[in-house]
Image (cartoon, rainbow, N blue to C red):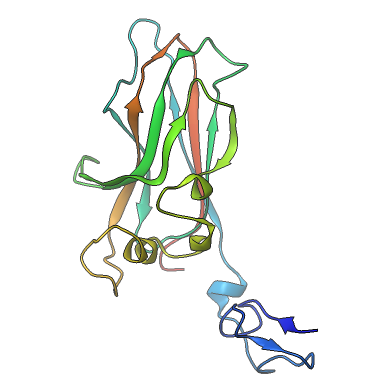
Length: 200
């Protein structure tokens, strides 16, 4: 029987750190404080679609949900939608969740509109109750959980400055309406990010 070790016990939490005697690879190994005592933070972006007179969002519209820093270490990105059992939503609303440059007025260009998730049926689909956007992603998968945002960008499809250094830049998590227009007057969306802040 082989024993494997996480990054709390060995320099790398990988299949290469294995022994068959029950002895750690290095008895003196101590995980860095940033790994062993991670100061986890949570931030939430909420948007209420209630509007009694006009549709709130239409195809192509962008919804800026929260700021993300290039040095943030992302562990979870979860979605809640009140599309059933609340209000009177009808019609359709399909959204992509991506990454945009922040810009001076949170108006920077979208770098990849479906970086986190694509074609999420907000109104007509199944209820979203803590839907994991890292699993829904076209670009990302759970293997990137716990990576720094800039490392994820460098390892996937977003070329931003260079691939070996943190650009120390702020970005926006942006939801873009892919298709549809919701009807009715009530409904809401909430995205939660659980992360280790940049610099900790």
